[in-house]
Length: 432
Image (cartoon, rainbow, N blue to C red):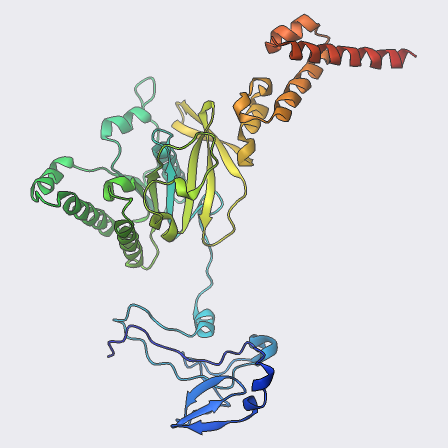
């Protein structure tokens, strides 16, 4: 058994690097120095220990592979035998080619919206207070429960007590919204936690954080044979001092260890807040509250934002994804409540983030009411002009158009007259 932190592997570069002209002659010379054989043609240094340079075995003992897999440069002529990995080592060294051939095929299974959160991954979902993160996360968990009836979803809810949760999913007649039986909710018994807050006068916050993480780990362990997907609402409870880079990094290490202890088969979505930002600013990863360590070490990152001047609408943006290219469009939703799904978000479709207000108005046929702050001058003029043209085709008069569109400025009246003159000219042209 070895105490080394690193297992070092020295291999031929095999990449066909061209050496400087002045070193060309030296590259043709093989020399022996201090018991080492230096093969300068391949720029690889190996021990003179009788290794058969013509038949190189991979670290897994599978033997030489076809030279074709190494491309136009061919297989490196010599490879040092790798030392065995010790299970106690943190960093495990493996030959890349051997690892790729021996590993099973990896298939990314999407859990939410085309891989924004995928199976075996850690996802952070952040947004402003009150925007609907809990509503959306509950909806994601419920949908997963229906789509995967053999798997269980666990919602660890530090945000809402039972009464608040019931109010969200209670019908007008007193009935309740249906949830799949494999959707579980973990809610805290704060009475049991009070003694941990009183047990340490100094550093009680850190002590309580440790207690909460232990309880989360215990919940995962208790349901390890049932629950594969966990939603944690939210990170501020587990690590109140999220601005502290060291604490945030330690939390992410803890979360990765928790996932790895179950063979990386557990999936986690963690909800987070965002500080107050300009409501017209585009989504950005740095808007998430806390240290950058959160979004630096997560697998995927989703931003959630209200649509300015349209409080019932919001959209999601994919800001990071380790397994695929991030989408260049956001997904727009509308918050609704009914007796079928309760409080939930209805997906309206994708669009460019800077065109979300236009997209909403195109669905509701209220483009002429779009607020000026959300449009360019061209967009506002075109929306009004298109509406006027449509009304003119319906034989509406100037006064009717001005009243219908609430056009009080002289510029809007002139626009109407311009369209009427244009229509008159077209009519004269047809008569002529």
